[in-house]
Image 1 (cartoon, rainbow, N blue to C red):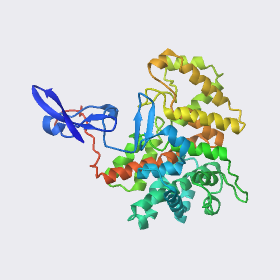
Image 2: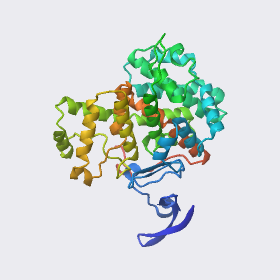
Image 3: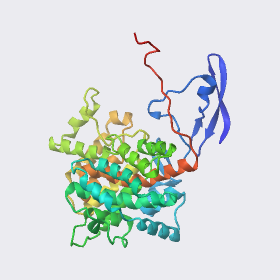
Image 4: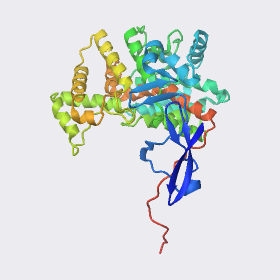
Length: 422
């Protein structure tokens, strides 16, 4: 709501711009700036530009705080399941017992794929990156969901059910496990959401899959930690597609492609590869830290620093404990985890990184957990996408309910002036 104004001068003329107040932040409304002054703003990377009003999540980057619908992430992780968190993000409040039961059962109604999807999967080369496969299959879902398009609520249940199946099929194709319906998704309705996800990934024919509560709990927490994070690249992509009335499936498909980027969702894979490289080269951490400090050296420490957080990423504190718990309870001797902890300790004491506020982020430890679960590096970002799904859908839903205009940034043209062909 606009309740005050900012005065400023351009070329001797005074202009008034309204101020918009959010729960924690305030913004100058420049929506009429060009119309009134002939000027636009220049903000590379949209570092200072709010594109929407949202009630879904909030980040205080200076204090290292993250809220989902007002609830601190530390409370969510200790008191809620991923499905409860998904309900919260999509509907604004935590579910009661009856609402949670309905939500969970409704997802299970869509726990199937059309046979044509399996046929399409068979034609995709196994060497193709899992995120490319997942994005393609998600978009293709549009062709098989026309019958439910009139019921918007069903679209959310449908995608919550089907993205895990598509992800499991993608994994199984990559590692050579059977990808038929009988093995992947038949008779899984007695399992909770995360246990079902793990069963679809790792079950093999004619063998009973044993649920490991340590792995299930760790994965559930990872999904929660990834569920939403304000207007990141992939979420903004989903909102932009939704603004032109692209359907939910194609919008999420685009979000998956955006998440694929090495500097976004692909960062956890980059962290593991960096740690492996350090370990294989002798484990001399100080040598690599000097490389990271050298502006002329292309090497950079992956998993440190964040566009928003200028303090500890609160998710990193949680995921570090989850990683240590998984490694301990599974009895895994993981030199990568020990190397990660040593690297973190050194970096946090190094003046260069302290000055630049480069603290560990969630990507620094999440890949270690996925690796302990038996998930290969090129599938890490697929797991990220599974967690981010409810956030993407919540933003798509919010944008549509708010009837937001088409997203259409302007640019500062620096090309030739009008010229003629001779």
